[in-house]
Image (tube, rainbow, N blue to C red; front, side, top):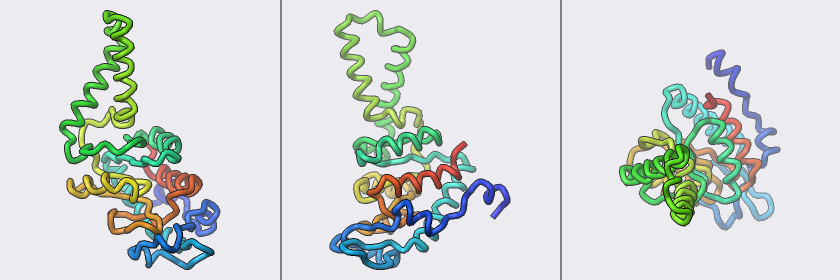
Amino acid sequence: MTKEKTKKRSKLKVEDLGKAGLHFGHGTSKRNLGMEPYIEGVKGPIHIIDLKKTIEKMEEALDFFEKVSKEEKTILVVATRPQMKDLVEEFSKECSLPYITNRWIGGFISNFSEVKKRIKYLNDLLEKKEKGELDKYTKKERVEIDREIERLEKKFGGVKKLTALPDVLFVIDVGKDYLALKEARDKGIETVGVVDTDNDPKVVDYPIPANDDAISSVRFILEKVKEVIKK
């Protein structure tokens, strides 16, 4: 590990992960057999994730993020659970990363050539509005255009600067956003994901075994990622 890397990246400690609640898995009845190597035991009705294993896998993911960041590759963040929206958008904006936090746009990766046209349409409308070119329309027409812009912003606002397919997909909930992962795999895009005890870690290239429900857990992971990729 280089001096620069040591200085920039703080050491992962079991006690810190524990305070953030990364070890709390799902109910024992929802266990995915693929997560067996990462489960330490059971506490009441839930599985407890082995934080030493989490650190091991998180280090691998952070190494990967650091590498692709230095190579200036594009990382697309996907987190469509409503409770994660604000947290993930703040993280993505701070790190200058494209993001999708509403519903996954079917075909976003598999049919990106068409999606790119919609993104361009949105950017064209925004540019015309900024330049005052929409003033020539009637009040009713401007209201309709504003509604169209609002609809497109909700759908494509986080990716409106994306001009090509992303190089990496970073998924916060691999169970909810499995369609995004499927499209990425089909296109050979590398993936990183937070994997709780009810999901299969094999669906991503770099799994991070951790609680994907708690804001504190996801925030901890994002802060560590931010340390290695923020420009």
